[in-house]
Length: 178
Image (spheres, rainbow, N blue to C red):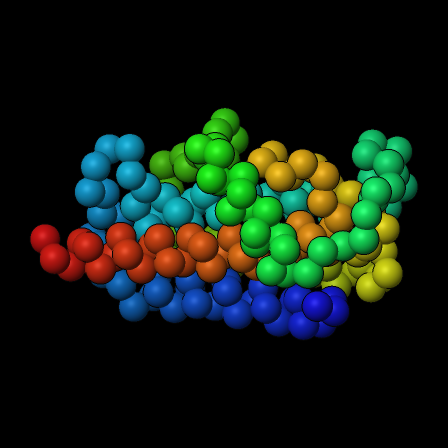
């Protein structure tokens, strides 16, 4: 997937989550069926916490990536292969930890949604500043999947949005049954 299509794919995922939050009552969006289960709002918070470090990294000089993590040892994989690798990592029973576990999300749904959109707008801006070729020449470590090219990390991020959107839809729909 080229950079332009990737930005469109990421934007589409962000917009779907924004629409869900806009048209869902706050009590359903913040509904938790159990203490250890994330609400839709906590899923949004997790997505924000996941993209913020990526934004900080993508704003750094390209030389930082080479100095810190070297160069890729393989070509960038397509979307389906990145998704498969993520599912394999999750299949090992691993889950979000530390800085990726949701904090208390903003209690005002419209503000939470606006913060979410701003974080992902910053991502699109950073990606827009990268040359197409550079996406395949630089590595970022993923906490579950290990080293990914920047393109693979962006493909993962696009899938991660959709993965959590499905969780949010299920959570919001289960709240409607209460």
